[in-house]
Image 1 (tube, rainbow, N blue to C red):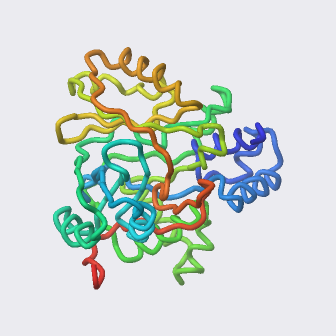
Image 2 (image 1 turned 90 degrees about the vertical axis):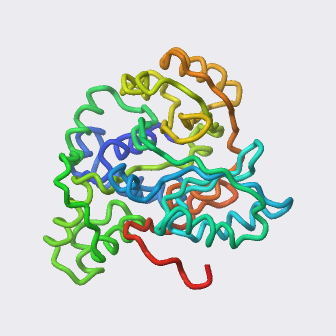
Image 3 (image 1 turned 180 degrees about the vertical axis):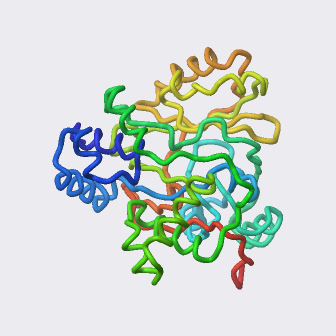
Length: 338
């Protein structure tokens, strides 16, 4: 991976929809060059800007981590079928007592998702649910760290800010159609959105900006981590005093390998995902977490062996993005036959 590409990705992690003309002086490059390099990264399946649900949405959607045990020889078949469900955001094959780890935000209720959808798979023999109670450190905050502090400061000024919730968290059919387009191309312009949906560009801008600023959705730049120098990932389950987490707003800065930290309901109350350069790095990262969170007890560790789907994006055997299953913002009735 060229260093310039990492700088471009870092810029888009901080300001996913910033105009190329605004990014050009910060990255000291021509706007046309930036657009061309980004298009190459997208077409190669190495990077993708996509929609993700913010906490305001996930609190209504019963977000959870779901561990599945499958019959021998059926893991890939089950994962491929699950990947078609918009409420199944991510699917990872892990080393541990369960083969598959899912991140889910069901369109229907959790009971219906488990009984009607997961229960319809004869090759799923058991499951374990961890309901998410809070996202302490969101995944979009992780960066490749290829830019200077001054560049990062200038880029943050270009990103739209989430405003204080106004109580209006409705998601209309038009909002859903806009999100569907952004799931496949997070940088799609207002004019193109308007043309695709037969609406005015001002309407497209107003509705999209409301979704972002109200904290219903966010946009993030994801990478094919194995190709970018982070071939290893691990999932940790632990227990820590909630008050310690309340004081850990800078956890991602203190532990740069941290991709995600959530609190969960279950025997353990905390869930971590870390991205690593090598497997032995896990010990060093775990020590950092223990230092940053006094009293933390790590109960279990799972290495991620393969990722089938990552925040709505289906991945191939080389762990590159190949297509998108758009995120469902509005509750829907289960599809016929599920």
